[in-house]
Image 1 (cartoon, helix red, strand yellow):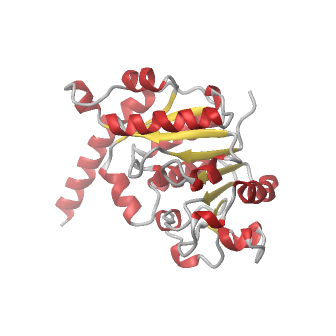
Image 2: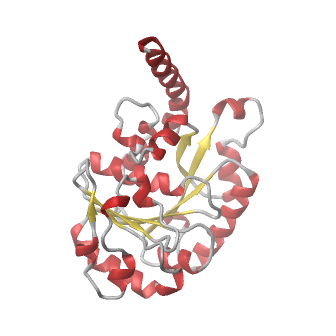
Length: 273
């Protein structure tokens, strides 16, 4: 099976961790030796540059490329640590109506020969920005959390994607902010619940983690910290997208290890203080 090169990360609602996933997935692929371009299609809001710690390096944006002021290559910003990760940032002063699906296809076509993977961070919801982001994509990752409202919104997005011509094979679910302890108590939906409701394969389970929040706030994707167990979740996803067969159970084992790792770090700092 051919590995998809252009991947869009989307969701039915905001706050599910879509931009954090985009940044960490891109960095995980880069650590595996891939050349990666991250495209922020969330025109008017833009957060991907902040999560990557690149907000002060942005000179040109997607709007400048669409307007013909610069080429897509000229607008790219290289990551400070991972030199094979590049960002095409969104503009905060523009609106989604200033970009069309055809514009996005043209921009991605220009970038396509230069990268192993292009990952598009889509705005949440189902309006114009969503259509812009998904139009040039070959594969879709729908990020959701194990909550009824998030699952319902994800289901709506799946219906739209099918109307756009995407097959089930090219739409995968990323289950984010998963808490195995809550599942064991019966207080959270299981992976089986989510898969049966959405009738699609879960390609990754990302445990809920304070470490991810801390890293995101610092503008340093958690994937860059090789000492954290949670980074393994994003690495597993990257490897699956490259065609490697890694059981989903591998992700579920990470949560408990991640908690132990976090506690050890905490008490280590406490003792040093």
